[in-house]
Length: 571
Image (cartoon, rainbow, N blue to C red; front, side, top):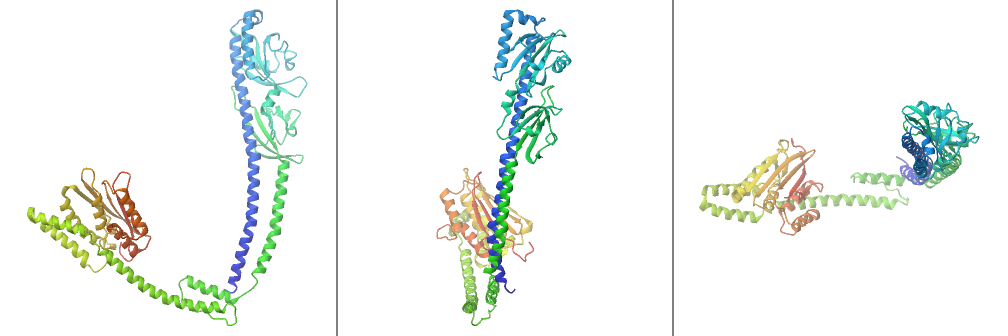
């Protein structure tokens, strides 16, 4: 055990010096992880979900508008009526302009006959993407194949790389194709709705064609979503020494409109470089500080002292309660005076402990005997008064009361031992309850439950009587009935005793006063019974045991007593 003191000092200094360094490293790492989650992953996921909702809303909204418009237009067997009849023309234009002006998004509408003539439209000519007109052209062909529902498709805006969204449906009357109606939603409007200052977005079809793109130039080539973005799920993608955080999500299907995917692309190269720089600085500080700390701690704990090690060992013996170990005095040592005083201290402590143990034992025995002797005089007076009247009214009952009182007093005053078997105390409790039954008659209802496993346990004498007396005193209900129950059960290594009544209970001042007595452990008042039981249990078994009072919501008073199941007894 040589130099143990030195090793402990060195260990303590090392621990408390290195802890701040490692805390700093952990805090820095946590902050970087939080920053990444908040500014990259959470922001990317949140904005991607928003864009997905926007695209789904546009598909769903214009799908419904197309169905409503085609349902109105198909009411005429000849679509030219909408063009040639001024009244109908005004009516349908008012309706269609209302449809496209709701969102103020620059949407155009067209009603085209089978020859490609614009019968109604926000523009007089077809969009560039539909010129020259061919019935077999992409979306028109799909409208002809599925005349019963709208279809959607992105179309190129002339020679530019921009795409507009076209949603339309064939107009048929009695199964005969009369023409087509469609809305054209500008791609500029779609881009403005999904643009973000921190994240780029691509809306691609099922063939990987990038129909809408806000930034993301590295992810689109020749109108296609390029690898590795196209196959990315969720995570980092590196392209030309640039890092991107990529997620993707399918736009929910709207009838036949399906297969569109939203890619959210967050450039994170600069952020990762800052993280790397911060981590490098943090690691450098740790690598520099740790050796300095270790060298400094070693220098501070280098002094070795056998006397200190001996002192530590000696005080460890005192901690374990062994005071008979004498410390060898190292003459000439600076700690010699401490060693001498240690020896003198242990000798004095041993003498003082022996004296205190004797005094404490005598004090506890005296107080326990005093508490046991404090039998309630009111009970005796009331019982004697009852006997006085019972002699005249029912001499046999009077004799039984006298016999029960005699048995109870003999048990209380002449029993030498302070601990008895639980079942023996219950027997004398029955004598007490017999007297009370004579006093109160049918008004008093007493019941008990005694666990068979605890009947042979040793308990303080007269443990139950004061608590039951208190329950009878305060247990009367509105109709004058007194219902009291006693239960004794085993609870692991302890006994749990519960006395409860169903009466009106104590007044709040009395209850609060009793609670205060039990907490403070000092009683100079007339309230003796429950306090005496509480004090006796604590004197005999320790402060972890005692009495607990409560007033259940249903009414009455509940008294719980907890004491140990005494060792060495069969229970």
